[in-house]
Amino acid sequence: MKKQLLAAAILAAMATMQAQAGALDDGNLSISGFGTVGVAQSNSDTAQFVRYNQSEGVADSPRIGLDTNLGLQATYKMNDWLSGTVQVLTRRGPEGNFGTDLTWGFLKAKINDEVSVRVGRVVVPTFLISDYQNVGYANTMMRPPIELYAQNPIENSDGADINFQRAFGDLNFTAQAFVGVSRGKLFVSSGSGSVATYRAPAAGISVSGEYGPFVVRAAHARADMEIDDITSLNTLSSTLTAVGFGKLASDLNFKDGKKIAFTSVGMTMDWNNIVLQTEYAQRRAKEPVYLADTNSWYAMAGYRVGKFVPYYAHSTVKGAGSSVSVPAAFAAAPAALRGAVNTLTGAQEQTTDLVGVRWDFAKSLALKVQVDRVKPEAKSGYLIHAPAAGTTKAINVVAVGVDFVF
Image (cartoon, one colour):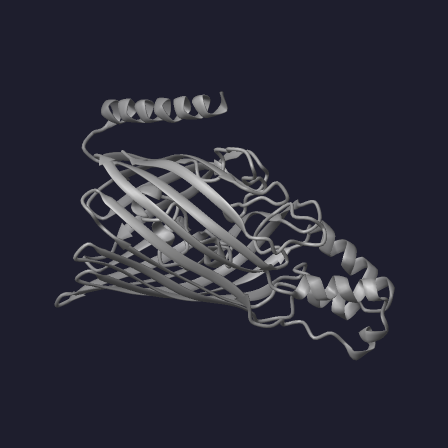
């Protein structure tokens, strides 16, 4: 029944938006949308597989919340140099239910043919596919690999960005710089799971080049992440302070804001029916904080056969050290307390191998079937609601979905 209701809601929203567009359009209004109706199931009942920042995933029964979403976008051109864009996205999030967020909301001023400025809410360009990572139809795989895309929680920023585009012969070059403040909620998987609220002034830059079938993009961003309501961390900090390790407690938490840097480089290729996509990223703490430094990457290869694209991908995330220096005196602390700190500062490590096929069976519609074999290696990887002792047991996830755009 839930699946039928969700499908009906999506179809109704599509019909309503198209009808309103026809009634309101004066030649300057454009309305579009995208979405996915998907179902997934794993072979495990001891832990759940999720996309990033979901508090409810899939286990050993079919569920629709993993990949299903609906996005609607409207752009109004006020004159030759000024326009406005709004995009909302409905999906399952950190609080376990389907919610709707404003993902884009900006005014765009065209300075000249090469330079434009946007003011408002924009998606930050930290990943290869940041601009369209939630648009299933625009991607070969069912979903961006969590091993890399979970490393940076900031999706959008309220502020401004400037964009520069120029063609150098057959090379199309783009540069983007942004500054603003990101706010949102994060699902914290430790313990029984909780939801924390963050605020993060952020800035960054990305550059990309398109040459024939190749697109290359590099990005760097920094954020001053502030979070003061991670329940399990606050409890540990209070205990550390009470036994004389207040500096260590302060180093671990985000209460006063901690600077985090994220760097990525990626490439896509679509040439002679061969489809390739790869990306590498590093996350580094620039101040002491419990969040571990990581290196992550993935690579995907597919081959187009008519309307079908079978593909394979491998992705992995590994720890790259900790920014927290534990004082020598901490060696005399109770074993349970030392274990809690060591566990907290360790990285979640995981690898995934996946195979799938995409079938563009109709105009603006694509059917995907994908099987992931997920191997958590440390701290249960990115599986949630795992046993307290953790799990390193590989699980298989089967997903089927229909992507659409309109």
